[in-house]
Image 1 (cartoon, one colour):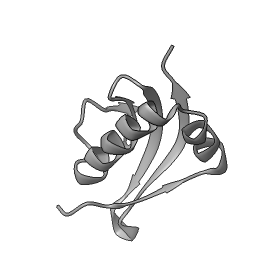
Image 2: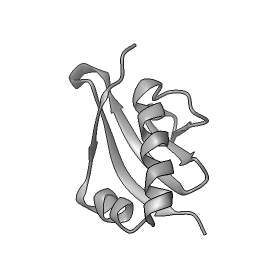
Image 3: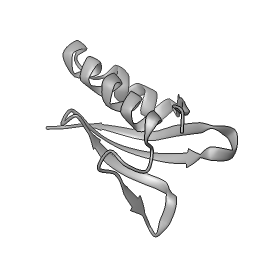
Length: 83
């Protein structure tokens, strides 16, 4: 599968913007990996729904996202910076 397009909700975008520049670089690399393999990358299904996922991204943030193969998109719902 080629990389899916990634979009961010407003809440997720604000979380991403709050990361330090170094963490943001690591985060972006991790999101690119998720776009290439949305069901891998150490992610787990949420509530038994294969397309609703959560994962830790390069130890800098925790994300919850949805995969929509029909519209070729990964939508990041929330970004929580790691402590």
